[in-house]
Image 1: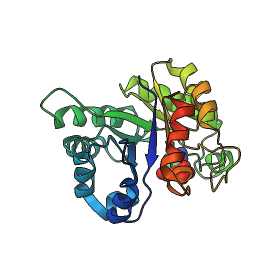
Image 2 (image 1 turned 90 degrees about the vertical axis):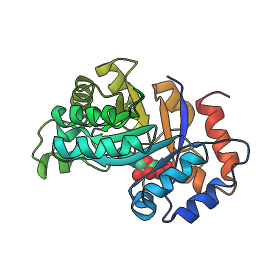
Image 3 (image 1 turned 120 degrees about the vertical axis):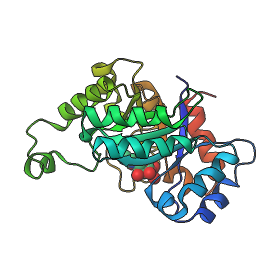
Image 4 (image 1 turned 30 degrees about the horizontal axis):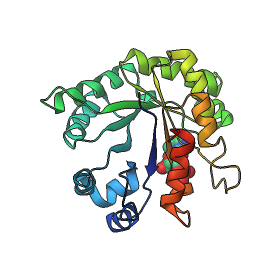
Length: 235
Ligand code: C5P
């Protein structure tokens, strides 16, 4: 598994995204397209960014009945993206269906990587107990949902970098931990709470870090991206 830095392109329009990516002359960063940009730009922005040579993590967090997820994944697989995701809360059966859909979408035997969201980092222990009536701790549900994802044949999970060790312990070192929540100690935390630096994320065991505002809102995004790569990949 090659460690890499994924830039979260959380822009409202395709134009703003392309303008941002035009700043990168010497490298083609791996990028994440989330719901906002996908709902604004649709499959066209995905195709355009593929045409420009970017690897793409399409972060749409599917969660529906297995048959619906399978069919949706078949369509996303054909968009030729590199990584997609689902909510592990959809059950092992739903995750298996997602994987089947991805495989059916392509005729050349390839498929995108597929990872599962365990617990959103915005879900507090209190909400888990009082609203969702889940008695287990957040960490226990993360470990169990990760094991479910592995059993379904998925490649890994999205989690906080601080939870990457927990996931590796539950599922083995080959099971991928893709981690947002990356911040430098000298910068703003924004709305993230369970955060760490790129170097520390590497030490704990992240395979990919997802970095948004520390790069997109930096005065020099290319320099900020290079700093993340140097610290995380070691180049
Ligand atoms: O700007 P920032 O670095 O906080 O962006 C992190 C990205 O990762 C955002 O696109 C956010 O939606 C996503 N993400 C997250 N925490 C999760 C899952 C996804 O921050 N648990």
